[in-house]
Image (cartoon, rainbow, N blue to C red; front, top):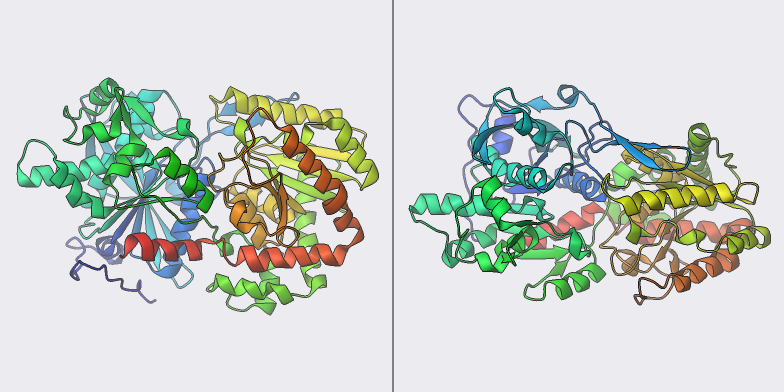
Amino acid sequence: MDGPRPFAIPGLLPVETRAPEGGGDEDRMLAAARIAYFSMEIGIQSAVPTYAGGLGVLAGDTIRSAADAGLPMVAVSLLARKGYFHQRLDETGWQTEEPVSWPVQDYLTELPPRVTVAIEGRKVQVRAWRYDVAGIHGQIVPVLFLDTDLEANAEPDRRLSYYLYGGDATYRLAQEAILGFGGVRMLRALGCANLARYHMNEGHASLLVLELLHELVQKEGVAMATRRHVDAIRPLCVFTTHTAVPAGHDQFPLDLVHRVVGLPEPLCELEQDFCHEGQLNLTYLALVHSHYINGVAKRHREVSQHLFARYAIDSITNGVHVGNWTAGPMQELFDRHIPGWREDNASLRYAVSLPNEEVWEAHRRNKRALVEYVNRETDAGFDFDVFTLGFARRATQYKRGDLIFSDIARLRQIAERAGPFQVVFAGKAHPHDQGGKELIQRICRAGHSLAGSGIRVAYLPEYDMGLARLLTAGADIWLNTPEPPLEASGTSGMKAAVNGVPSFSVLDGWWVEGCIEGVTGWAIGNNHAAPPEDRRADADSLYDKLERVIVPLFYRNRDQFIRVMRMTIALNGSFFNTERMIDQYVTKAYFR
């Protein structure tokens, strides 16, 4: 098996990597790592519930493409022994949650080292579990999951690796200290002595920069980090911001920070740059200390630049791992007509010439799998031949999953005039998000009110990566209705694209770049943000295109509809992927 391709980092001399004495190939692999990728959540497979949604799924796809490219990377995340949560919906559509239980040792390998992190004055021991992500040529990116559930720890500290995004501010800050401080210390304990980049996938991990500063200060034997020390570690750090919602940026009262984490006061000479009004802002902590900062779509870069005007923010638009998200029937189609597509995602542009009948047959197989699942789980009576819209996102107010139900009478008219249709939903609301739970309930109630009409509605519980594969491959159209400009990127529509499923979406996030009207899908509304209280314009646009363009095209001009499917693969599937994305990180952030 070939080893990872060597990468040279400008300005750094080649290093001789040595595994710890007595170590084998796995130790040498860690010693050779040059990039440490930190993410609070990482989705590696559905059976390992260490992710909550798009951020973690993107992290998993990023790591897969890094392994495909042979990048010398190691990833660090938190173990979630109780997962995110099991979602239960009652007969009214109200969500309740139950803990997840999964056998960690069946999927991950425990590593020997132990490191400690001070939490509220206690020394909390941390261990790591390892999962190897293999690339298409056999190269490995190891993923380390940090765990505090050790007998040596007090009961509250053992629970720090139980729940993903659980608990109060103290619990959350303690988790982020484990990730940032503990992650760097664990990398050192495992022999990762040659790291040249620390990539923070969102601000949750940004306490790692304080650990890097602490190492430098300790080495020099000085009392406090100064601007010179910050300048010294900035070339090591990369920061990707993922949210356009100001409230989505973690911040903690400084008195809580000093009590929980025990940091010196002041933190460093530049404390005022990332602490405001008595709060430690983890986004600003990452911004101050990173040499490269990016948003996750071109529109998101503009929004982020407005939010953080003092910092130069670039954009690298998100993507999906094509091999991971292309359903079996489409994989077979690509294998016949586009050999090498897994290694060269850009070659999917040749989908423009795929035979219509083969594209439709592959899609029908995917759709049949989805319809059978929906009917088995919900008894919704979905029909295989009826036009089907899919919508699956985190359930929160700004995603506006209920926009399509703004005018029930108009929906009924569309079904009567243009043809019947059915809508399948999925998505979890955060346990503390009352508005998100109410959104799910409104969708379920709207579905009940349409019983007996030409419109069927189903809400599938337990949205995870496995269900996402069914939905994004089996729907006829992928619906997305966020409140602009709050959609940072969105990747579900990209997953649909590699399966030939066009998007019907508000122009926000990635869709600003991916939408060619009538070619790769259709836009809802215009390219300008409307006041949050004005949903009518977007709803009217949705209804007009559904009635006059999309539903008639599906039922009365099948060849043209399939042409849109082919163009979706050729133009969007070939570009909005993590192969292209990781290449951009390499040239812009990792090795420049």
